[in-house]
Length: 169
Image 1 (cartoon, rainbow, N blue to C red):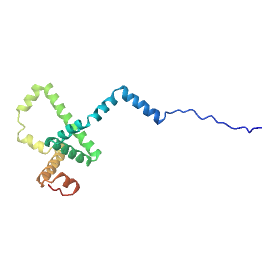
Image 2 (cartoon, rainbow, N blue to C red; image 1 turned 135 degrees about the horizontal axis):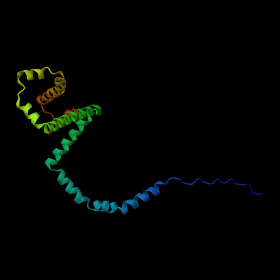
Image 3 (cartoon, rainbow, N blue to C red; image 1 turned 135 degrees about the vertical axis):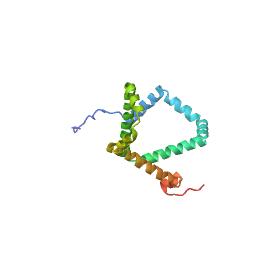
Image 4 (spheres, rainbow, N blue to C red; image 1 turned 90 degrees about the horizontal axis):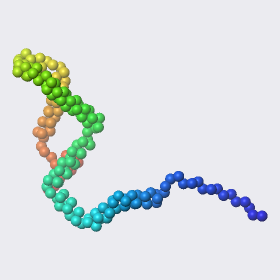
């Protein structure tokens, strides 16, 4: 008599294979016209490349590309928490300016009377002793000092400044 064989039914697949997903992707790209567009781009690649090279070879485009690169390099050196803090402070300042603007429109006559009267020497003296004003102005003053110091330094090529390597022209 023959020996009994054990047969285990393989479990049914619950996920699609990579081949099926690729087929679905190809069909979707074809249905929406992307395959046709990509084929046209590939066929016209020499024309497109010559247009891109001609556009990128302009001095203005090169300057813009280098400036964007420098902007991204500079932003990459600022920790996100510092940049976030700066943006929130900037937003608060803009909102305060907008708030004063709205108040001046609603109280136009009262504001005009206040603007006509000069603060005088005593008013300026009070402002000089205003602790909150100085706390608000000190970051701006320190920023202006740092800005002025950087402007006084001799200009360097961005490559030299960021990598320390000399450039040869």
